[in-house]
Length: 293
Image (cartoon, rainbow, N blue to C red; front, top):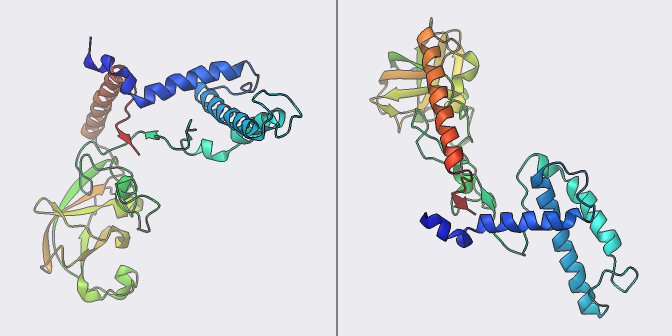
């Protein structure tokens, strides 16, 4: 017997799942779960109805009318409240966009899947959070701090796109206030401008903000939001704190709109291995709930 099986009672998520299933079976007899197709919706609704029923009983106890659901007694309005909860909660639009988890107490635990980058590439680091700083302790959405990292920011869509690289050696060009969007407090002297030709590479002109400059194995891209393209030339605006010399030797990691035969085969092999790993992971550990907030 595995040690995890001996500690099943310590798994808060499984306990909540068991409670939700029991409540769904209970409230299904009332007819208030009719029309709900998924188990998740039924469990969520059952939890909400249970909470409302507890509140009605508590109010009746406080007003001395008893704890039975008898219509017309003082504060008793179970015949209206429960169907109203059923109608309103089922129509909340948030359920179509984000995860909604009813709580069985005034305070509780919210479970979520914490997605992380699996490998390091230019601009991304393995095990970094895909949500950026919004899921880091002290940097929640309630904090007055600009979101960053993860998928937030210019060019952050390039993690899984087909990439290639092109070596270059260029000198810094002229930088004007327009080069960095006329940002208040910045001056042209704080930046370098490097223009690299990607002629013949089949680069994706619509994905240039995801392009990265790498020099001596170090990603020196500092302001991808200011990257521009003109014909086959891509211009990068880089802070002088990242590149101290006016000349730069390195390579551009870019997204290609063309796939070679070798690249296609490599992609198919990678996806095949990834699907096998995902299947094994799902069978062995179906609930990947690593973090609690």
